[in-house]
Length: 390
Ligand SMILES: [Zn+2]
Ligand SMILES: [Zn+2]
Image 1 (tube, rainbow, N blue to C red):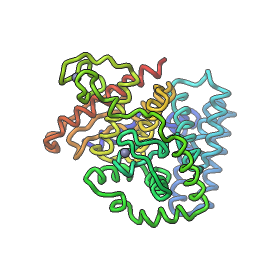
Image 2 (image 1 turned 60 degrees about the vertical axis):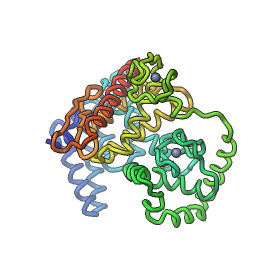
Image 3 (image 1 turned 180 degrees about the vertical axis):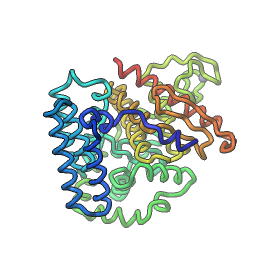
Image 4 (image 1 turned 135 degrees about the vertical axis):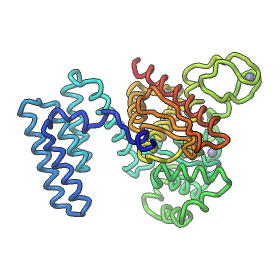
């Protein structure tokens, strides 16, 4: 059953949308061959096979399938060959040359890939200043929650690094050095009271090495400067966002119309509800969600962190492009499961979701937690779907 839930995929990849230029499947066969050569470390032959696949893709454009599909196919081959730079250029050309002729699915796939690429570029540049503020995900070394900035107080606990060593540690405990799924594990461990150094192997050594490297030294000096500049600025805190104005109790569900405790009407705008929703979803990802498809979940978490940042710092709702991309990633993820698979929420048809409680895997808190997860996903996807159309 889970194989089906986690395995199904919607037609939403470059491979799917370039099918028309490769009716006989020839390019995909050559690409598969190239991939298996690469996995056997036969790199020269793999490169030649990718080049052959690209040549066939270009050739397809002069035949009946037309230039648009041929370019999509070429971009697919280049992505598979890990030649991301050329693939990205072709995707940009496609947008510029064929903007109006692209179908909705094609436009969404291209936008999604370009967005993902621009994020990865920033993270890969190793230039901390550039990476900051985009989707760098930091794990707060004080409270273990994930957030987007190291130079600003953590939106959950207000802690901010206060020395060169804690700044370096902050950089190490981010997706600049540790992959997002491992950051989720770190967050989970910290919630049980363990310190980061008990969880991340050689953390102190890594910090020391980073501080002694020229790039690290430069980055830490820059971050130190930014922290001192930002000090004392008023910040929005998540705890304030969650409170009912009348009784000060925390509101749990972002879509609630009335406070569960005092019954008062909750008249919050989209921005505030969305902040609450994403804070809850991040907390659930940090503490409960099963890490089944790490790449997709990582991408999902990155988008959540980046949307929350826009809301906290700029009071901005996510753009239509981000919303479309979010829904695409959700559908590719196919499902998100609560602890021990007690509750599984199908997301393959996002914005629609389907909730399954798996009786023999449920714990005492599966219903409560699974319902919360489902309600927040439902609010997020419906709102994203509406904003995407605006
Ligand atoms: Zn914190
Ligand atoms: Zn209340």
